[in-house]
Image 1: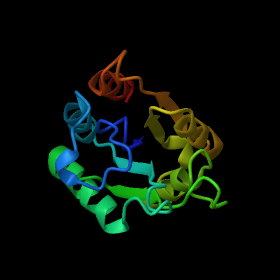
Image 2 (image 1 turned 180 degrees about the horizontal axis):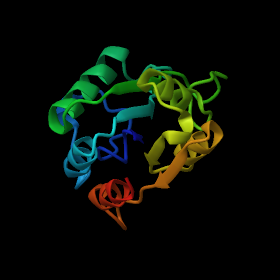
Image 3 (image 1 turned 135 degrees about the vertical axis):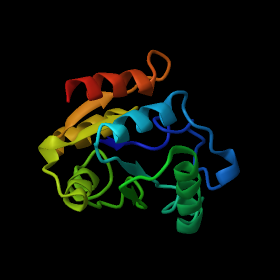
Image 4 (image 1 turned 30 degrees about the horizontal axis):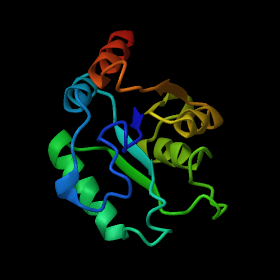
Amino acid sequence: MLFDRDGTLVIDVPYNGDPERVALVPGAKQALDMIRSAGLKVGVISNQSGIARGLITIDQVEAVNRRIEELCGPFDVWLYCPHGPDDACECRKPLPGMVLEAARLLDVDPEDCIVVGDKQSDLEAANAAGAQAIFFDHAKTQLSAIARKIVNLE
């Protein structure tokens, strides 16, 4: 299972480079615990254009990622795109680069991946890679409900 970071696992704080400002989306830890206990691998794929824009550094992004891992437990893969929307890279969602790379690193077929995200670009990246996509609207559901559904399908 691959998760978007901001707005999916954590409350979206635009261009957050401060680990102290990390707040989990309700149910995130429980969802990840359920998924891991079912034997599924978990990863994070995240656009971080604040790096290209000069608003945050790679070190700050990685510090925030470490804080998320402290709160949520270990992830099998962390990937982020440091490019801006006009950089024409292959990794920035909605392109499938991060989904494909995560699948490769996890040694699974992209078709066996499920991408959970809160933006259309997350869903488009999943679809372009041949992965399954789940739209997450934290105003309407909790990640733990999504996790229960996935775990019960296994």
